[in-house]
Amino acid sequence: MHISEGILPLSVWASGYAVAVTVAAVSMRNMDMEEIPKISVLTAVFFIASLIKVPLGPASIHLILNGLLGVILGRRAFIAIMLGIILQAIIFGHGGITVIGINTLMMGTGALVGYGVWRLRHLVNFKKKEMIFGALAGAIGSVTSGSMLAAFLMTTGQAFNTIAEGVLLAHIPIMIIEAVVTGACADFLHRIRPDMLTGHRKSGYQ
Image (cartoon, rainbow, N blue to C red; front, side, top):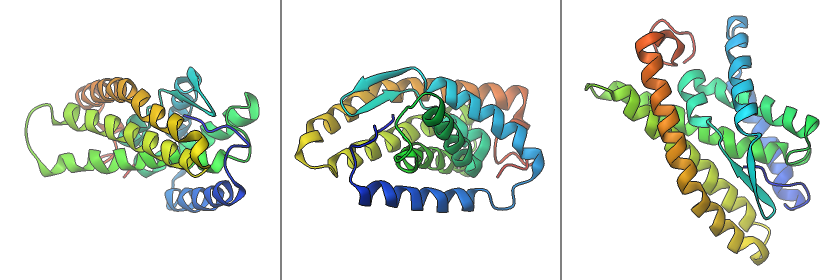
């Protein structure tokens, strides 16, 4: 879900850069070199998944998998998403240079919200909780990003209000797909490689 360049007013996209850089700095705090390969792999997953997009006026919608990144990388997911968006803007011109901050905020915030939802699984004890909370992380992460996209479009004035409403409706099927994919991956990794999931007691990715 990229916002195209030239749509948002200067005050909005400049603020987006400032906030995105600040959040990225916090997300990188105490990062170990051992985490870099894992972050790189998930950056590639995000990069590829979000290349397949459907244009929708001044924006586009696509799979994000930010909930999945939150489940696996925790707060480092914001870094992976920022790197992916920078590469997409430079290589393919997706979005544009001026809206890298805004696009990172949209998708990165969804990842952090998904991570927060995923952490709630420790409060309950029942079978398949990883699948359920993984699905919730995927769905809520997608909804968060879609809602932010609509909100940013509304800052441009009445011209894009109808498109903003369309963006929210278009994210219903995306939310379902993200929930299924993230829930299935979380359940699979819990059974095969639980150390890959953030919050696992043997994992350094908190």
